[in-house]
Length: 208
Length: 195
Image 1 (tube, rainbow over the protein chains, first blue to last red):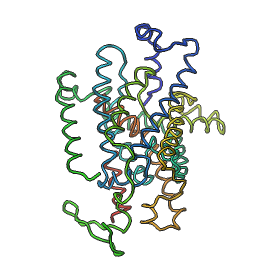
Image 2: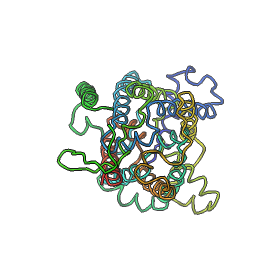
Image 3: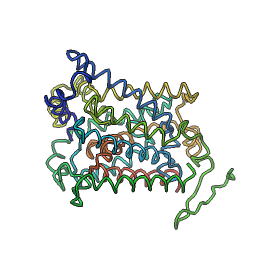
């Protein structure tokens, strides 16, 4: 539940910083503001891509949930395939740290289903909602108010949840290869082609 | 294919589904760029955020940071006493900047592609709920946002954080979460548009 604090420990790890040298942070003293700027830059690219990918459009997202428009699935699967291969390559050269969120069966399922209901009602998700706002779909403004209220409401009960739902089926940083007791590389050699075949199948059997 | 004024019936695997005229998403414009190109570029972008910022792409926690900052300005003591904000202090950080950048980037994309809408109601919503349904839309969007943010915090991420960044790292929890996002979303959208 604490991705922020998690990544702080990572960026504070001296060895990782030194191994990457000055290329990464040419202005070391201003590294913090640098990161904020990088955040904006990455955000602009992300928003640009989301809009060009059509996923800032209400009918494309609702179409995905009606199983009639598979644009969202195609974008997500392509991103997962490229990102998966790329990030594990970088990781094998010790260039990046992984940021795997803890698996908590009950919280993932209950939270996931609540999220899904909200996704259907709002028609945008948190990232594509921001993109929808940039595109001029003003109805998302009401959704953003809801997102703020929902976030605060969760914080209100976060103490209780950490002692109850979060403890049900808590498995730590569990990955798919862990689950079937294989090593990561052989798993990826099967998994990535499977995802590619699924993507080809989606392309073959859908209109959009 | 134009549908008559009467609701048509499409036969989905094993069940008959009502289709209201104008609620076929394929009648409306699709993506400007190939979804495979866009997805691949988002994959490359993930690599860049891992390498340069040591962060995965994610959107939902930025809303929580914003909510925490607003809460702190209204009720500082109470907000700081909450476990979530104690563990995740609400600050203007990388994630919030990413979210603001997303709005700007989408604006640039829509502007350059002549796709700026400037509308309160999407045509597909109007086709289903009428053009005088703004207050309904605002209430549904508000409640939807509330459920979604609560669910994202409980599940530990959203369609970006779990759906892309988590799944690509083979996280079991992320795959479970994204499957549940779609189960909940499909059920809700079907009730709204196909019942």
